[in-house]
Structures are given as structure tokens and as C-alpha cells.
Image 1 (tube, rainbow, N blue to C red):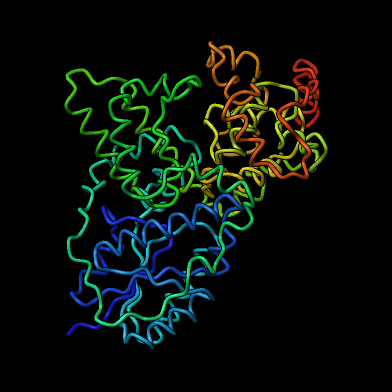
Image 2: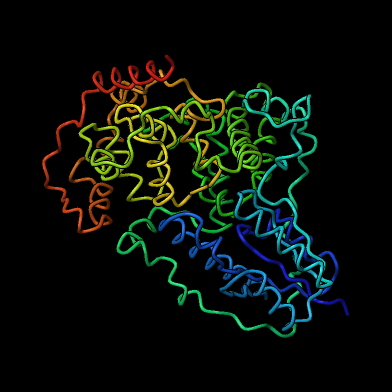
Amino acid sequence: MAKPTILWIRKEFRLADNPALTEALAHGGPVIVVFILDSVTHGTGGAAAQWRLGQAIAAFAQVLENKGQRLILRRGESLTTLRTLIAETGAKRVVWGRHYDKASRERDTRIKTALREDGIEAKSVCTHLLFEPWSIQTKTGGPYRVYSPFKRACFEREDRIGEPLPAPTNLAAPDDWPNSESLNDWALGTAMNRGGAIVGQYANIGEGAALERLEGFVPIASDYNEGRDALGYTGTSRLSENYAWGEISARTAWHRIRASIMRSAKPDKGFVVYLQELLWREFAYHLLFHYPDLATDNWREEWNAFPWRADNDDAERWRRGETGIPGVDAAMRELYATGYMHNRMRMLTASFLTKHLMTDWRVGEAWFRECLTDYDPASNAMGWQWVAGSGPDATPFFRIFNPETQIGKFDKQGRYISRWLDADSVDAQNFFAAIPRSWGMTAADTRPEPLISLKQGRERALAAYKDMRD
């Protein structure tokens, strides 16, 4: 009888189109599915992401149990934990899905080398992306630094995106199970305090919910080119948290949207724009792989001379949604109460912090990392540097979002602002129920005066930029 295979799950909480699961089943023996809470995993993302990780684990464990399998939970250094499991089960293979951030790559390389020296087959496969970051190269053989040619190169290689793998019917459960720790003992949601119950009302957890949301998006995807910016209604897929936790694959979404295009006599622009957004996510990982310090260092070295302010009182008011600028404050409250922020508002709030408030983009990146349930190390880092002007293919620094005109354009009926700033709104009340009591904020508080006039902030930022350029 074939020896067991250990399937090491990290962010692949799904059955359908899970190449790591398919590979684990390929040799015919029993499969032992394990999640390891190590220092790399526990150090990725802030309070909201750790809470969301716990939800993803619980949902996937239930799916496995319904199929006669189990998710074994262990905590500790990964190599030691895997070696212990190998000794307990007699496994001869370990399979996992690749990650591309610096810490994960260093860990995985070390583990793969050590296990092979132990005589254990160790194999990693692509589970998180459409293309491996090293597989899309310029004509001279290097990585792309600009999105548009990268996007064209991906479309030219679209035939390399295989069909999604079906969910297996037989998950090859072992006769004997190794011991598992209790998810409750890990207390992954502790740092959320009372906010966890509020954020949980907005979360979309698990593979089933992700697939259902995709199907709900398909009928409106044809208008995505305009709907993605609308604040008064849902015009986006809202699948970012499910992509982040591997509860649905980008390949599944790609082919589902492609199928809609093929059925259309005259495909609407929105379908293609959504595929381009999936490639924007690919571009973020392409950059993170080739430039592993993207989340910590200015990608353009000349920006080291820019007079960013370190964390400051203005940034704290930005975090709390108390800048006195309605669009910014509404978005920051959405972030804290839901663990999510509309993408248009991510750009607006990042621009306000880095330009009007002249605050280092890393201050904002850290706060988003703390609060987002869809936290993604590549997209978060690239997004902040893109807005700040210091990153690859970045928006020019002189392109400074005006919160008033942005809200006027994309929230014409004022629904978004009302949702988060009107004291009687359920969502606004949820914000005040979620925030720390130490903030001392209530719905009855008078709205603050603006931290800075939009005109003054813009002029100050442009002057600083000119000084740096000169």
C-alpha cells in the first residue's frame, strides 16, 4: 500500500482547482491534510487577517469533515512539525502550494532542502496565481516593471492558463489520524477584541460562499468597467478576501468570465476589464517576487529623499476616520467596521495620507495590513507605492485625488457617505461598536473640522515634490 502524503495547507482553503490537493492524491495513498501555525504564518497580516485566517481554517475543516477527511492543526516551527508528522504517519511525500513573499520563500526553500536530505519527496506547486512570477519575462529576459506590457504578455500566453481542476470525489482519508490541536486554543481572533463580531457580519467565508458570490457577480460583470468605481451600489465582485485566502482560485474566475465573453455576440468591455484586474493582482506578485523588499523600501530610490512625515497625530486622526473630510472618514470607518474598503476609496484615502498629510506610505500600508480581512502582501504593498508615487509604474505624484470631486463623481446620491457618517445608519453604528473604547468616540460626537484644506494640502505636497525633483 502506498505511503501517506502530507498536504501542507497554507492559503489553499478549497477543494476545487487546488493543484496541491490534486498532486497529493496523485500517488494513490492516503492524504493527511495539515495546517501549521508557524512564525511566518502568524506574522502575516494584522488583527483582522489573523481573525479571518481562523474563519478560513474553521470553514475548510468543516468541508473536509463533510467529505470524510480532517484538517490536522499543529503549531510550531514548520520543519520540526513536518518531521514529527512524518515520523508519526510514515509519510514519504509532502506537498504544498507556493507562496512568493520573501519570508515564505526562505522558509520553503529551507524545508524542501532538509526534507529531501531526509529522503522525503518534497514538492511545491502553483496554487495562488495564473502564472508563476518567473514565467512572464521581457524580450530581454528580465522582469516587467510596467503593467501594460506585462498585461499584454499575459494575454498572449493565455493558452497556458489551464482549465480549473474539478473538486476530487475521493479525498483518500487515512485509517489512523494523527493528533490535532484545537483551533479555539489558538485564539486567532483575540486581537480583534469586540470588533470581531462586527467584522464577521460583513465577511464572506469559505469556498461555497466564494463560488456563490462569483455566480452573483457574472450577471453584472459586463458593466464592471463603470461599476467598479460606483460607491452607491455593488458593482464589483467582492471576492478579494476569497482570493487572498485561496477559497477560490483566480483561474476559476478567469474561465468563468471568459465563458461569458464567449457567449456574447458583442462582448462588453466590463468582462475584459475584470480580467485585467486579475492580471493587476498577478503583476503585484510578479513584482514582489523579483523585488522582495517592495513592502518596506521605496521602489524608486530617489524617493528616499522625499520629506515624508513619520507616524503623527494627523495620521492617527486618519486611522480613526476623524480627518473632517467626509469621503476619507467614511472610507476609514468602512475599513474598521468591515475589514474591507472599496478600491476607489483605497486610492483616495492613500492619496490623502501620503499627499495632503505628507505621511510616509508605510504608515498607511501598516494600518491596512492591520485592518484588512483581504490583506494580500503583494497587492497591499504595490497599491500603496503606486498611489504614493514611489513605486513601479506608479501614478505621478502630482495626480492628487480630490476627495470632494471623487465623491461627487462616484457617490452622486450620497449613499456611501450616509452609510458611514449618518449617526442613524446601521453601518455607522457598527463602526462605533467595533472601535476600541480608548478612542473615546461616539455617534453623538460633532463632526471634526478638516485637518487641512484640500487646496493647501495639494499645494504643500506639490511644493515638496518640486523641491525633491530640483
